[in-house]
Length: 220
Ligand code: DX5
Ligand code: ZN
Image 1 (cartoon, rainbow, N blue to C red):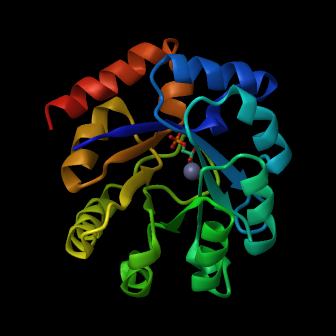
Image 2: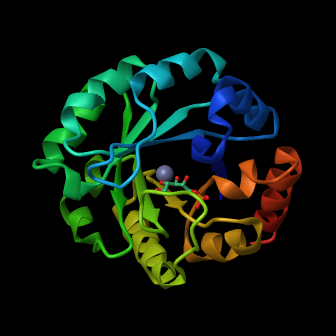
């Protein structure tokens, strides 16, 4: 299993974002997770395509844009132009999920769907064939530094089962409360891509933290 670590810049120093992106890449990040919050779909406000475009020249790994916005369609071409490589959204935030997935693809990006802790996986029945990424939230979206919701673990296993059955190379990403302490358990449930905000940016040594995560993944 190839595991990927995606530091969420939500917990980075926003006054030094370019430097922070370069620092986590040097520390071994596989993706840059870019959380977009609109103070409408979620009760917080972060950054839009302008900030993504400003970071793009600093990015040597793919930018993984997690849209927590409603509506979603209007902003997708903007993020594609701003250098996003993957774009994922919450099905609750789109009136026409299949159309939104098509739009992401048309813009040249890989497409993902995000499931809140209480959102069932039934949407996958009709979308998995056109997804590159399934993102399972293990906190309620809106803030970094929240507690991991362990009751989502069986849902991770169920998503892995569905991905295996469909036979396509779909990444299974987990977001919220991921730390070195629980990363092995999350991988055992079936995840292959791990978002970590506070665990990485809140640590003194990004490289040591990512190394610790990889060491724990190596023995899964
Ligand atoms: C929460 C965001 C997460 C957040 C995770 O809505 O989607 O990406 O940054 O932060 P931690 O890793 O601190 O839980
Ligand atoms: Zn996120």
